[in-house]
Length: 149
Image 1 (cartoon, rainbow, N blue to C red):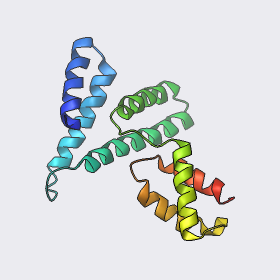
Image 2 (image 1 turned 90 degrees about the vertical axis):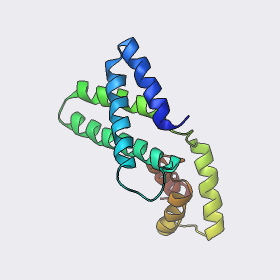
Image 3 (image 1 turned 45 degrees about the horizontal axis):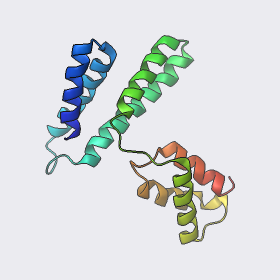
C-alpha cells in the first residue's frame, strides 16, 4: 500500500470517528502529495519523495510551534505538536541515538577526523548517509558531541 493510499484509508476512518484534527492534517498531507505528483517531475513519485513531503510538513510545524511559543499562544503550539505526532506515524522507522552514534563513529574513523574543526567534513558525509533515516538536528548534536565540540 502506497503512502497516498494509506492516508486515504486513514482519512475515511477519521471521518467516521469524527477526529477533526486528524482528518484536516491528513487532508493537508494528501494535498501536498497530489501537488508533488502534478509538478511534472521526471518519472513516478518515489518513496523518498513522499518521505520528503512528510519531513517538510514536520519542519513547518516545528517552526510554527517556535513562533507560537514566542507569541504566548500555547494552545496553537499544542495543536501543532498533535499534528506532528499524526504525521510521524507515516514516517519510516527512524534511527535511534545509539545507531546514529555508531554511524558517526564509523564516519569519523573512515575520514580520520578527530577535532571539532572537522565538524563540516563529518557532518556533510553524515547528512548524506543518514538523510531521511534520522533527524538532522540529532545527527548534528551527535557529531558535535563526538568530536568534542
